[in-house]
Length: 112
Image (cartoon, rainbow, N blue to C red; front, side, top):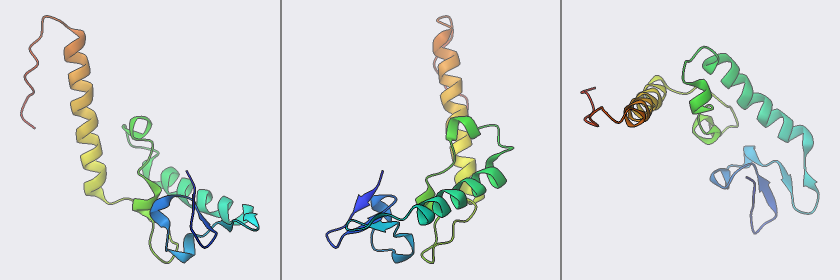
């Protein structure tokens, strides 16, 4: 998704609007390919470094880049609590799926 402001600035997402360091182009000049490549390079570098060994990586897909972005333009690793919450949600989703696939099982979740 991209966002274009009333002033003609192009951002990689509507959540970045107003954060000048994330402008990737202007409506009158188009997308600056080098800025766009740098943005995605930084995002995927974090995913590769932080998420590559996580069992939930394919389910999660990496956190929303906006959550990993600092106002100065830096993309940082996700915090442990966020990752833990995503994994817990994935575990519950997988448990529910497995339970519903077996009609003889109750749908009462276990504690945790």
